[in-house]
Length: 546
Image (tube, helix red, strand yellow):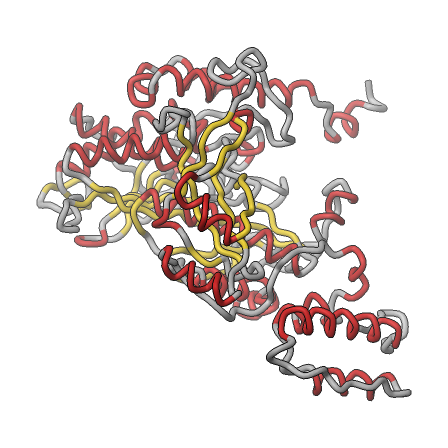
């Protein structure tokens, strides 16, 4: 454990680490291991080599880089204490209840996380002792306070919701595990996790819950004999500062992981593997199909792609992906953000949505003999695209849910500014990619800050409405769509988007008045909070000059 000033080993630190390692060793492995025979040498380097050699067999939570790495030693004391586990070992993948019981009996799993998402898409929930979960949680799930669907980003309770309020006493809803999502969270020590649906006390899906909203649209498609497959392409920025340091710095002047643009550049991307590679391995080991990762067009900006699947599963793994990234970064003394536009002078982070419709046998129903511009497709494809494009402005709050979201939409920034479609053209909001069995629509409008359940629900609802009413898409555009004045623009601010959503007959028919009123109240409160805030930009611009 070296220091930057001397580069030498501190004996008292080694003694502390050894005592901690031996204590944990005997508590958990006294029947399997013998006491490490490690004696401190006079020379620091000898001690270092002795420790490295003689503790090679210790469990990963002791050998973790969190204890022994020197690359970030200057920040050792300020590192977040977490249960982050550096190595992928032990149980892996999706679990059945029987497999979970086996691992619990063996001591390989002792904690089960029950998780659901709020408006923002963040996980909330509880950590269960694994034995108690098997005894009680499997059958009954758990209760949680319904105020969780009334809070803002800072957990301030917002008023004005009809179904949840002080007047109603903020009672409980039920978090009911969906056991098809039960998996090992390999980045956490001896931990499994399961995604939950939110039910009311009568056992009905709570309509305002994000997962319930997506379920309702999936059911509508199913009633038409359709199933939707999709993927979300998440982008993010990585920083060498820990989350605690970032907070203390007021999120200013943070050190990005890259010092030059690394879009597709393997040399720069290799330096960033310290985080990206760990997340890829943990996601895969946790039963999530990882495709690849690549650099993006910002300093320390990356994209990691998950294989397409049905929309409910895709939304689940999207939220797990973000949780995993943040917790692994925290364990390494780093941080990652999924803000849509963290820096005004760099590209924003998106969550492009790819979507196609299939029948019960898995056939891609977007393929066909009709012609739409240069695309060979079905009428179903045309109508789905037409509806998706027509109603995107009215569902914009589900694609771009924050004040910051709308600062991403800048010309020549890789983010779209208009409602146009084109073939393999990244200047358009809707990009047609693939052909035949792989034919799909990519919506480039959603940002990395979107809640995937709401974004996919909005996308599917718009497309189904297009099929229902046989809505034709506008003519396709070619060339630089940024400079095409005839292309209709997307909403420019959250306030504009909220008005469109609140007054949309389509949204009220598709999601229900209760859902629209609930989220209208939420997004209005977010816009009002920003309007009350005094920003650094205002101080710099007006402090002296007014």
